[in-house]
Image (cartoon, rainbow, N blue to C red; front, side):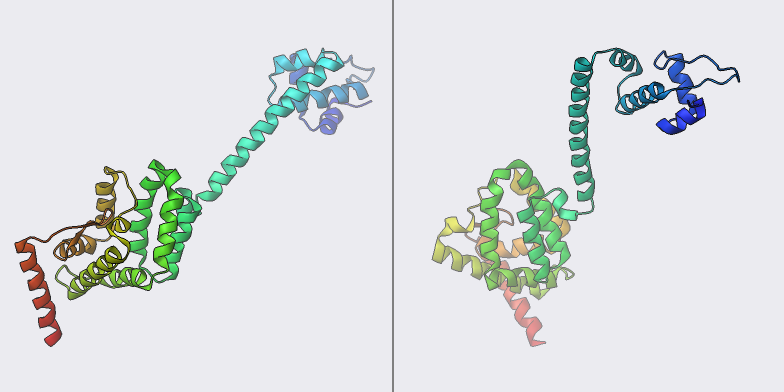
Length: 277
């Protein structure tokens, strides 16, 4: 026979909890013995453990009372239902744990793994982090609006990363990030990029240059993200337009106007002048 303190300790609850269960009618309160103590038997221990387990599983105390009075078949069915609910809660908590873990995972929080791998590839090649960030910011709306297209776009990016000229474009732009708009490196980069695009168009066709089929409304948004993160990119596109191409997100061939041809000649003259100094 156990005292109330011993019963509480054995069942893993407090004496206050035992008295609360007495008050709720869940656990019968025994009569006091000749010494003035209430003594609890093995049946009380089993009952109290059942009450504690059901309560900790989220079963309301009113429902606990019903279950304690149910027959074995009904009790087993209810326990099975409780078990399934707990399994669902565990699965949900596991999903929360995975989301929490991803908070420290950087780009993978908002991007498909193949895009993250592409960004890591650019970093490994020595591309400036600001350019990588501009790429990342552009991929987020793309992946959100057209997730089914990401594998095709990534296949194209992997193909481009295998081209030394394409990588050289990124590296040259990295070097020009902290330069002013009149820096000759931007003109050099525009020359190299225009030549590269023209070569691709001649060899593969103009459709090859812009085959991403990006939603028209997204292109200006992605351009703005890039220009805000990589300010020289805006000037680069202006220079590129005088060389027959335009666009950052959506690249297209254009015919330069007379004033633009004059601007290109000025750019070339300025570059030649700087070299001769």
